[in-house]
Length: 294
Image 1 (spheres, rainbow, N blue to C red):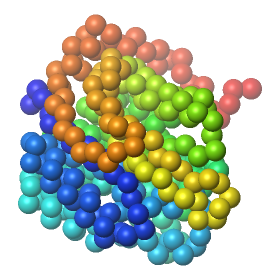
Image 2: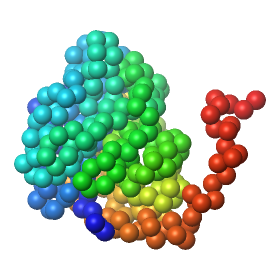
Image 3: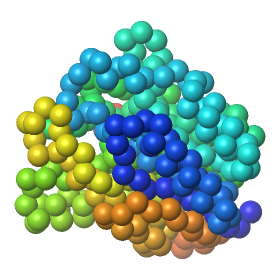
């Protein structure tokens, strides 16, 4: 399989869970109708990004895996014959919750899961209150369309995560995401934040000779506490090739569904001329396992 048709669903969410799910499913159907074989949704696509505040009632939104979402989206995957990447608020046990990506195979069965490893705790992104860090490591998920290196949002700032996925045989790096501006940020600061976000992921593509796909949400979501001005999610989901080249960038302020054809041969071609894996000094990297070298 030298090419892969990939679908991205970028949407704005509301407090109406059923409406959010319906919108996601409509996007999946549109991608499938355009020939997508692999379709990726944004982070926590069933609801609002609830981590702007700390509220124990939000835990009611958690669900088991397998559970209602994997059943509903699994039935759709089987109907359409596509591989789906979901992002769910997993209830693993009472008081134990994760931010979990789930990959569904073309038959609707769960091909694998990934629990978000890096958990932020920043103003308007109070994720440590809700999510236990993942305990599954960085292992690609094998599917009928290839080995998927699925990570989640904050993981995208860590080159170690991308590298370990690549070293384990991932053929593409995938980041379901929910990120945006705090509305009081200056335009200059907004531009710096977005540039950093896109640049580091393009760097992962270059360093590992792999395509990178980031699927972000769009739209404004207010801060229920009123402590901040809320988040304007910046959309601009994108696909970068194995030299970091931008192959597709979605609009900032629009919901969009797109399908793009990835050339899978590019990884082999690029790694032949830029053999970074060959030249890694694995004998000299022991310091990377330390918090800080002092």
